[in-house]
Image 1: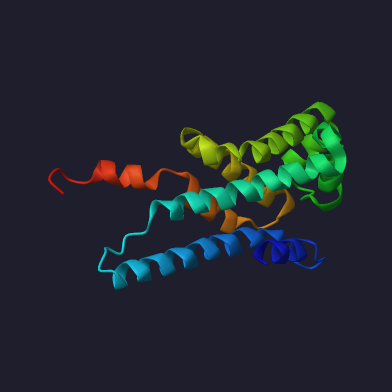
Image 2: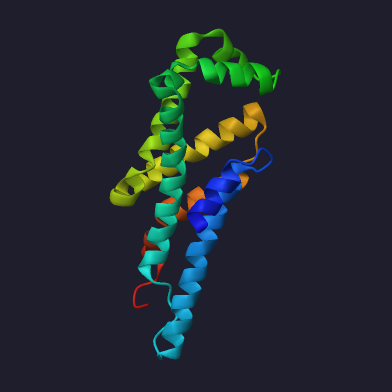
Length: 182
């Protein structure tokens, strides 16, 4: 039902697809809360199970890899030639943006940017099985969203936060900063 609901929402003309990822992460958090409540009833600790973080990574990877796969299914490798990107920027981009002008005027730059974006979206699937790539994918996805925000003024700040929370190694960073003996 959730998958069909996501497909339905994604195809509404007025629905912003950036809301699908927060929805799926909320599903993971609800499942985690249910698991914690069951643990409390059983007299166990209330620490979130490891699958919560991995579930968030999976939802994020599916969201971005699905976007890349959709581009390939709809237009094949032609999407990476940059023409679609040039048209989007020509029609909707910030006319004062130097990046917009550069991408529109140079087919090679446009193809590189479009290919990089497509490659990054598809590479997000690797976050599930290759945790060492997660910080690099986070950096790439955050950069992608900042670029989209600056040039097209499409607000993906929510996704920026979710990418950083799910893909950056916060638990390891916090474990490394604990004083000895704790």
